Length: 113
Image (tube, rainbow, N blue to C red; front, side, top):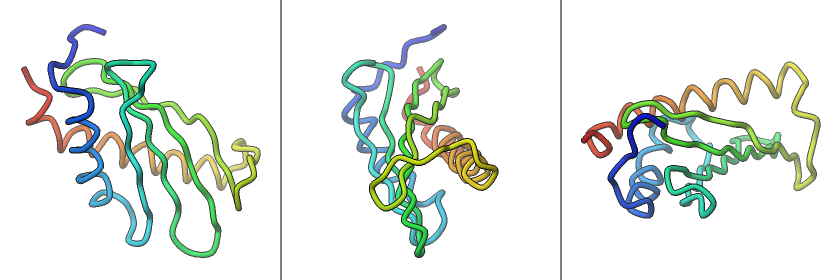
């Protein structure tokens, strides 16, 4: 990490919790928590809208005040882990990753030094 962000991790998680739903599709739900294993990181859980019952778990770590690294941790459907290598799941994961990056850009005012 080139620059460590200077924002309280729990305050940052709260800001993400307020902002991320605005970048997602209507009906999608997100839950953001501080990553207890990484003081520069967040854990993001997204439940998809509609009848698919998919849920995605991501790790999101700040590389600097503007850029985040996003890693897909797990995908579930109806509470069961599924293979995330299918094209459909990969497309959804890429879409959510893009939304996570958009949220980081939106919150730059909070993380800039």
